[in-house]
Length: 315
Image 1 (cartoon, one colour):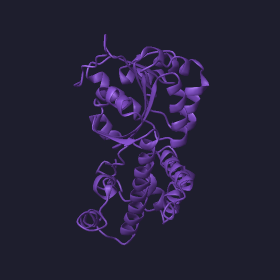
Image 2 (cartoon, one colour):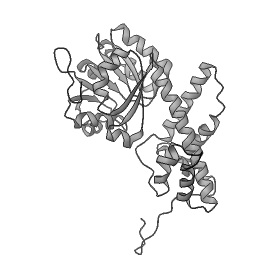
Image 3 (spheres, one colour):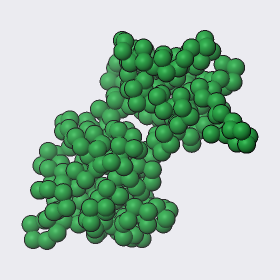
Image 4 (cartoon, one colour):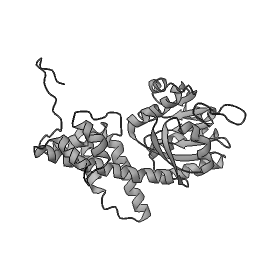
């Protein structure tokens, strides 16, 4: 099935979205921009309107009205509050219905919810996302999916609106496991590169030259290629994962490794860096501002200093 033609056996497949915030709103807009109808729920009515969705009164009502339900929520605590906080949510699950969890969540929590949804005859698919806000806006995210393969195929036409690449990683919870592994490496590269760039600034090096060297050498990583060329010009690429959420993801990774019996020898760095950012007032700022937190305790370093025009304004 191609984009824009979502048909059930006897009728049009109805799509729903729960959680229309920073990432959920962008994914939802990819659907509604195509002309596909979408019912949605968010605690903020303005987010529903911005996503172009038809608002309903609750998350349970989305489940009642939609055949494919997508959720993008902050963490497992919120997800469980939505799923279990209102009895009608699970009561409204129908045989064959697919619920796709696009959040970053605890795999153990995911598996529990999947089992409860399965008791109602539905399918709960965990689909971690990667790519960030700008990539979500373009509909080119990468999805790592756990759960029933057939359910994924049924949901795929809806996911194709905002995903360029979709990987089926295995059984329930495996998508969220892969997401945690990926996000840990993301946290490592961002926090380590931030530290290096603050050092480069204090060493009076040209930051663009440093990035050029790194990107042509063995230190190259996602942050050197995609983040810091913008950050050194003062563009922090607003709209992505906050420091609070990055710390949450790293903590979930550490919990995962503890359950697996794997030594987590490299987690102290990003835990310290994003914890520092939270404590210094950057909790709800994009995680790229971790470089400013490191700069704060390194003598007030900033990679970019706005230039003053002749009128005295900054640019």
